Length: 256
Image: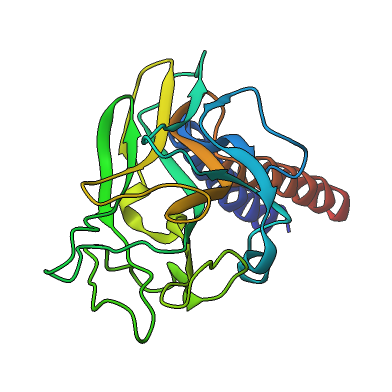
């Protein structure tokens, strides 16, 4: 009986030792965490400045937008700016946001009229990471095209009257840009971060009655954060197996 107990204890201790090694070599590890988030339902965060004003989303609320978004109607390409400071050490960022392309965006144009191109832009610390044309022409309008081809799931609505249409040839569109991998794992290590959204182009006519845009559900995730503790799963395995081995040993001793 004691020989069997020693054999089983030896096996349990070997398993526990393996768990110790897992716990030791699992940490430290790189982690990701959302550092900034807003859906504008509680007002405009102090980190966001520049162009734009909070407005009701109207028909956009049916596509994942909240009741309020930040709409930019500036006619001179003024950006919406998000500024974050005192960031912890990290290696990259991921950006999520919803985008409303409102009313008569002409994309690349129709090759005849001079109302294009109309670009939507996103920059990180002044470096362009996104610059594509969008179009909202409906049946009977100009035969326009756009440079942006949204990946699967990104386009939430296209050519829909979502409450902001002012004419008969153009309607509205909605996008979940966070599902575009272009905005994942963007290299960044500085302690400050500046993100800007703005529209421009030779034919862009940004006003409340024409070509405007809005953003909502913004989230900035920091990747590669330092973490000096073992992975939770490994630490739990180590503690659990250690307790199991100790309990088993005590029971075998009592039985013997």
